[in-house]
Length: 520
Image 1 (tube, rainbow, N blue to C red):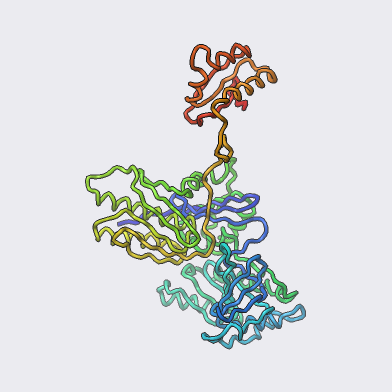
Image 2 (tube, rainbow, N blue to C red):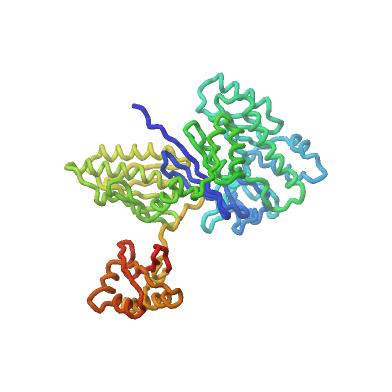
């Protein structure tokens, strides 16, 4: 059986305050990322020079000031095997030192003891190089590691390391040997690397170019470390756009649409570095319509982020979220029932599983997710649904675990939460009550309309207007021989035509001139 071809499109909307990135699979919104374009946000992969604020022996951890309002957290086990080498580099570096000579001359090791204690390694006030592995969420600060890595598309660079590891997914022994020999030949002293699956078959020029750019990024931070030993950002990962491309780019990517020239050039340059043959997929969007509207991202956002998420054939999900627990209820709704109730329930549940897998990625929901599927009597169907959900979740980059259904139809999914879940308010403020929950009394609505009509006739000299209203308000204003509309025509010597619209709320009204232009 031939698998369905998946086309991936990345839509990048660069605004004045933030950059929004939508990942589409077969024109369906799968992931939505946001990146502030004003100031610095604390993101995964960012590397800081931080100062130890508190050492907590009871937790075997420490709190570190990296410049955020919330102190970051580092556990002893996250210091890395060769923390002593990084620590020596920070202590000995200064503006008068040959930093390349210092770095290459520091011995790698000794290895940090697995059962060691944080207070034996860190002291209050000590400066350390640390990298964010989990973004600040709610009241918690960032989670840090002192085992620094710089991830590229094909290679991950490891400062103060010796090993060269190769992805187990590369099966060819000849290819493994070629890649290891090539990378070892170009790695300077005191550097290690992990060769990723994407490196398979890549020529030497691509790998050398990427490795050099990663080394330049790491070594470019040295002057900042040596200069003042102050708290601050040393370097950031690439933008979210390039980070997504780094992790996901493959032959199924068809287009990357960008509406900003600077980001377009940056993205094109990055793809030319990691996958030159795909450089042509980057396209500059210059249309007048907003890019998210043109590619129907805005519409999908509004339909996908509400509490109630509609699916095909009348079925729908209800999603409730708290700090650590998310509950998803599956409903068959108005879906047409088949003669076989059990089979129909199974089909609705399978449909729901597909939408749930998408929603977890789209909202970046983490923690515990409880799904209340519609009850199924068949054990075979419950097992099939469990396997189906596992297959759907295989596409998810976040670490996760799916447990089998209980006999009452409950499924538990745990999903790693490394950044705050995306919350988008899809409701709009009522144009009549402006969010207060109160509208003008129906007893005085005729007076309000008459005041507006009088202003149009007297101040603007209009002789003919169209009053657009809801059917209910229209009936109220035109009933009887001495209706409100008849009275206004005589009083203001003006033609008043009433037009009804089913889209209008009960007391909503608008005035238009003879040319159909809205007045107010």
